[in-house]
Length: 236
Length: 243
Image (cartoon, rainbow over all chains, first blue to last red; front, top):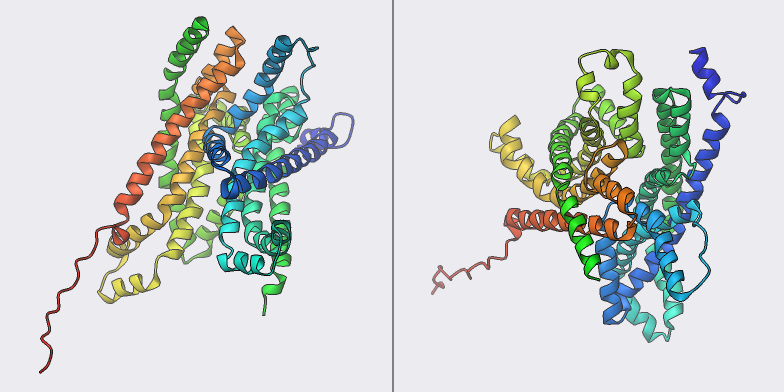
């Protein structure tokens, strides 16, 4: 028991600093991929709703593929496949071959690409929930598309979409554990290394589980209050 | 170009041979998770607080942690527990396919139970009251009134969960199972042709998921009897106007 406490402490043999750093890295990767997912998801939703035919079909295919292929495969494909693609491209065009892409970027990009496919569906549904008459009214008042988006779509969609985005965030947080396969030392990877080098896998995986539970609980609480805030005009 | 196609062909043949492993994990954990989820749903509406507490804790634990961590915990973590290591269970826990199925059963049962719970809450109260008024109790009420509605309401989300599970089976490859992803990684280690191999594997997963979702949508349509598109014949006027 004393042994376990030393291993989890802040002392020279303790893994606490590395595990906490892993937590921060997990949060950073998840936040980055969430941001990538939101930007790309909005674009995809726009493409599905208002884009020309070919763009609409492309966005549809993107959604079907990225939601139908395992996240692990997407991460492996990007991490191991992207460099060989870049290499063959640079050979074809005679560029100087760039080095390996940083795992952080590839990791958050691959989780972000998957997240975008889910977020696009959410945004599409959110815009669909706004009554058509409001768009017609906005046009009748002479609103431009951008003003209509800012004043009519955004405030209402944010309210409808927030709980669903909270769900996507939880999935992002858990998918970020898969980035461990690229060697990025986020929480999962750190616990794996700790388990391997101390031969206490039960202890370290248990601690990692507890830390993930803390992260998911804290963020679901945050989304709960965010939802209450965005609904603040709706009470009473 | 010809050589390239031959390579993709041989890789696809190798990957297809791994499809049964992926489907086995999916089938075993899918069936077990559904059965377990039914039990958890029953616990969630139990009168005494203990089963409800167990269901809530189960959901909290398995939905709040990544599946890959659960798989590692069961495969590597449990191997260090003396009574498992030296007990009768060791034969099971040393098998990575068993560990993946166990982890996926626990994890997905938590998600499916939440789906069932939501569907149970959405079963119209009037139907249940009507059933009771007709003298139905217990299992008869469940079989005749609650289950038919519940299954229809839950099916769309349940199908989604099955697709998610298909994708999750790829995590088995991280604990040395040679499923589609595992074989793909093995082939890449020999051939270094990452893009071709992973794209072939991705195509296989897409095919499996497309088949599953087509089947489940067909089932959904089949069960959706109250909104079936059979047009009702216009009711002929039977009452003679009063003269």
